Image 1 (cartoon, rainbow, N blue to C red):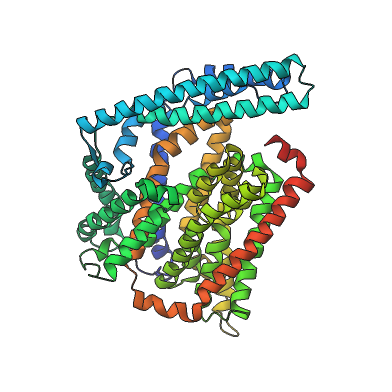
Image 2 (cartoon, rainbow, N blue to C red):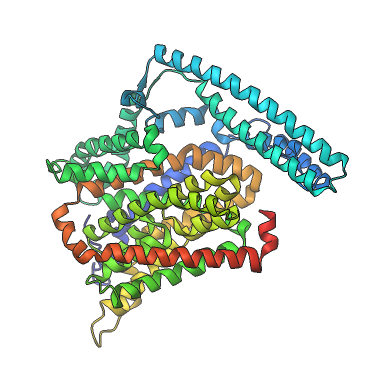
Length: 579
């Protein structure tokens, strides 16, 4: 995309107003806002039937059980599950949207299964799934009987016997695990034929128009973009297919790594076709996705973890960012300051999203951004597997482990996967810490822009005005912040339960998050298609970027673990006890 203009007219104002519909950052805002507000218009006026009644009944039951027992009983969990089942995504229109926007299905040996399944194979899969489901139901029933019996023994003792209380908690946890396995088996028992490739063609056309029409206003050819977009989208589908393969899912190799790999494979072998290049728009795609990401950063949820989470995310992260940058300049002797700060932000804040915002603020080269993103994906894949294993091996408390992973693993999806590997508690803490950390995307971009304008690029004796910082600041961050504020206010006005039903399990999960995933995947494909190994090689000179990332992440791991332990177990243990 073209550089932002800073001139225009006698006063510069005509050009500045024109930027609102001619510049990439602003179009990222408009497109992102369109997505989230279409989601709001679809889900808010259509709450699930009986939503309020179910929420009130469940809350009443849960409150009564909290008062009666020192631990969460079977009845408590049943009431909680009844409330959680009331989802905006359960409505028929939401199911239709999910079908149309879904990524390729999971598969084991035959990649065709990702896009198509006929009636015969679906019937076979359903029959096999029903057998497993029936077995899972029997295990759940047995686990429930054991849980109720253990709970009755603890109740008969007036909940005064700590040993019986622990036995009841263990039995209830076993029942919940069995119930989770039953839920997974139930999904497989509902196998049905699908023709996902048809929906993907339709989605490709719609997204091509969605991104292509604004190209006209930005001075580019929508027709050329649309033609190349089919190729970019096809590679994105291939990346999603590979990430859906069962073995790849087990190893945690997600769509981002595959998208970059396939893009680089093409660009460094046969070469990216010239007619595809107009659709290779890394920042355009990911900036739009980042604006949508704002809908998932809800301030009310940040407060649920409280001050310990804020310390872990907002105190450690800036320290690691600044320290890693100084380390890169003074010790590693990085020749490129833009590469240094981009890697530092990528590693310390939240991975790719922070790297994109920081690279835009300091105007890093595309090769430098690609290198930072590549390092992030490699380390993320390793950490999301090794950290849960380490936490389990040493017997680390799951609140502490969740906070540690949430503050150090770069990608939000990887954080959720690693947390889920441990427990619901670890998942909740890890995801919330990462959400708090994501708030720093905009703040980091602003301070990097400020520092670069006033320190790095400033000539001796040169005066720097505030407008120069404004020109450098990535404008799409404003959309990210605005969407976050709007969704936080709506969520707060609805209340936590209705907010979960209509926002979390409605607008976000049923619409915006899926589209954001597609936009990010398109961006990663574009990174690969625009990357040439020969151009990238010079940035690896002496292995300095790898040394910087490894040393910075090691420092990050140590400091985050220390801060999490101090905040959650020494300073605010009462908050930890409530999680």
